[in-house]
Image: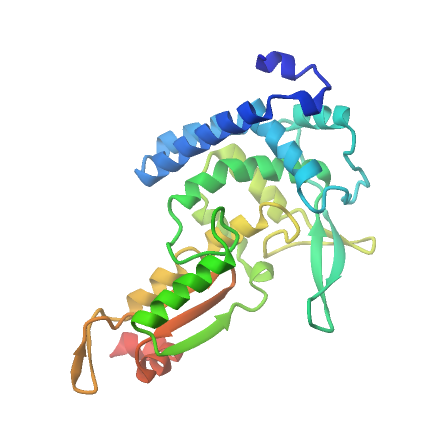
Length: 302
């Protein structure tokens, strides 16, 4: 079946989904390989190609209207996509020309095990679809660059993988553990800093900047978003990972590779850090390391 015929059919379930997935994944793999080889110009060219791909657009629409848990949740425009012909029309509308993101719809959901609620911002179905399309172009690039001990919100990685890595570390070295998280991480990410790290085609940058600045409708009142990533949006976890990438390297680089500890030279002084989204653990060999890590400036000055 040719791509041209895909644009006119309304037989959504009869589309060649296996072929669509295979072709899209092949392009994503090429982006990953280019990024791994530090071929930035080639990676950007491939990202542009994927962003324009009708196959990738079909997959983005299927993800937000069929696969995701919130597929029947509407944004501030109240629109839902339920029928096949609506999915075809939405696919044809995905692009940057004439596009302007809408504000998020604020909803509050209970936190598990806590007597409090957590705010989420629900984008419109069209915004979600374009976010899914952009994510499909950005994710393979960053997966080639992300730190190896980062596990949260990454394809092919899970909490069980993070636990396994921790288990390996404590069996070979660690005796002390610092458990920490970043308070209101998603809400406090600096937009300028995040945008300075995103290395992608200019049209995708424009879209991301729109989403960061789109604002929130809370009980009919518009609130600006001066910081943070759009929680509730498909692309938010990826943007948070991009912002946090490098944190592990920055912390471990503070520590010298070797140091005299209790009269003996420790040749493996650097801590191991395992991060899962905004939660992380620091695994250390001796108590003094844990104390030092709480006051890293002292180590830098020594």
